[in-house]
Image (cartoon, rainbow, N blue to C red; front, side, top):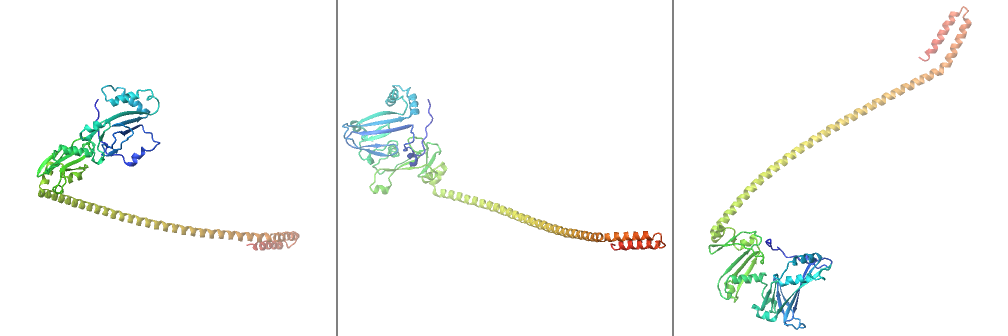
Length: 411
């Protein structure tokens, strides 16, 4: 089976993220603990991959000239099922640790519901440590270094820690740590493959530095170099090693260039300065052109704003004139309406006054009507009495005069 290429985790967990795991109400599906019992009668040191070195005090009650280590893996139900399925195919060709885990998970107790713990045991005797180079042993299964050095500061580094890598780099450079020679080694680690090859100018000669992948190391530039002369004069011995994170600023500060030509020009300060000056002048010219273009654009925008401002002012003036015209029309219409109302009031008033006069005249007629009727009746009686007399004609004339005089009262 082919496995995918491994990649490095970019960062360690921040403290607040780690604290989440310390809460008692969180279910942790997989938990690993390692216990150390020191029966050697003296402290020993543990060196970890992250660079940490810790001292383990002796337990005099053990009475054993050895260090016993127990690694415990605790699994929940889901993890237990997965582990049983995986370890089913483990046979004698696999490691003893996997075989031991397989046997523990195959017990009836382990198959019951609930979490289960699987342990692995390691025992390192004092004799084994005394015979080992540097009185230290690296245990791959636990990824730790166990040393008889009692002071952690003097204990060897973990081989895959940063300090251990620098020690390994020092060996590869073949520099005599006690001789006043000059030597330098640059190691370029790029596990993500982001950066390409770099070129380094040393004494006007250009050297190629290719990046490489090494999952046991953190991405960066590892520089191992001899001590400076003033450091040697001060009595120092050995070499110095420095780690740099990958960045453009790092490449610039270490004079690592992307092309052979750039590295070559770096050896010629005058040529490099001329090139930098030309580039600077080019950037200045580009900036000037950009400023000119931006100024022209700003002028166009300002002109457009002025045009819009004038247009909006004219539109506002037109709206104001229209409002004034409509206001005047409303005032004129209101005046005409009020005049019409006044005329109508006058006409109605005259009409009712005429009706009042007519009613008054009718009342006067009704008032004199009985008298008129009585007068007419009297005239008729007189006429009848005189009809046959010689004065008949005279009476008719009198009656006519009486009636005409009556009606003349109402004319």
